[in-house]
Length: 429
Image (cartoon, rainbow, N blue to C red; front, side):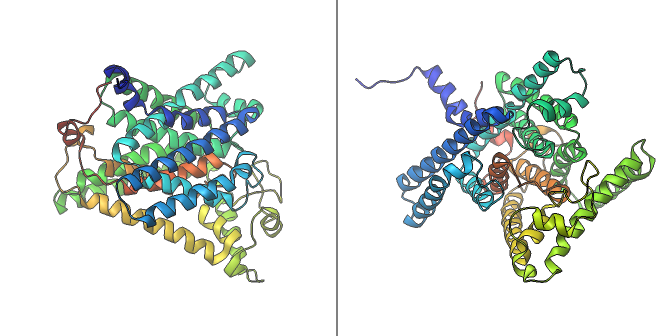
């Protein structure tokens, strides 16, 4: 007699995709240095499992051998480099880009259903993270205020590296939680996702990253606007663009000239721009650096950009370019820039194809959302972050998420939530 799970249990397991909880556990465990290797081990296991699922599904569906060979090749590369990844023996080396590629390969093999479950697990991980900080604040008598989050992280955690790495992670998790909230229909999932969105944004604020605070709502708003204006009249589009230009100009004026912290904003942004300019100029400093850059590590860039202070005011220890394009130019020269252009073009092509499928005039509320809007918002957040910090360095978890989020541009769906519900494939949990 064939064993069958109870219908309710089967439904819950189908909805939760429990193996994706490995990513959830990896995020939470990596908060502390003491559990970082365990976290990375779970991350590697999750990648191996996802690649095996893609390989088995591809072969089972009769997809060409070329597909299977490509996935098998990445699986082999992951296994060979597992020790380097888990023990962080190559944290600043080539495995950075292998992990981005692995995240991309996994993401491009996820369907819309799987993506919706994936962003749920990513999003709700902000809840235990929030309670870790809350518990540490109560134990160590830190005041219950936003500023304590950065202090607690720097004093007792630092599993993700510097606070900028954690801020980038908080940004990615927060935007995942928001879109999980929008796409989830059941009470349980919607409640958790709403709590996760609030918790994630609190972490963004507490990390001290101005970009994380701004990028989450800005990316969501721009993606929403693009999809809502897409099929409407040119006159309305022109009016909206004019209003947005005025709004963002006023915000910029407030940021740099009128706000109480405008002087601090100008000084901090000046040093970031100067760091990016200097790292980019390394390409033109001779010794074939235009083609190859100076290679991995911060030693040579710190020597060439010694006059720029870091966040502590120290010279010669700036560490990174505060701009992904400048970092690639300094480390890898024109070849690194070409790599970034290829990746950006891939994402642009994928997003363009998704947006082209949305032909109808969408309602102004959230129920008109398509996956194209979520993918656009997610990738806009990554683009904004890449211009103000170096998002891929020092954190293997962030590297996988960067590739994963870039691949969201390749989910083949133009359905709105209403059409998704009409198709009868929504969960009611």
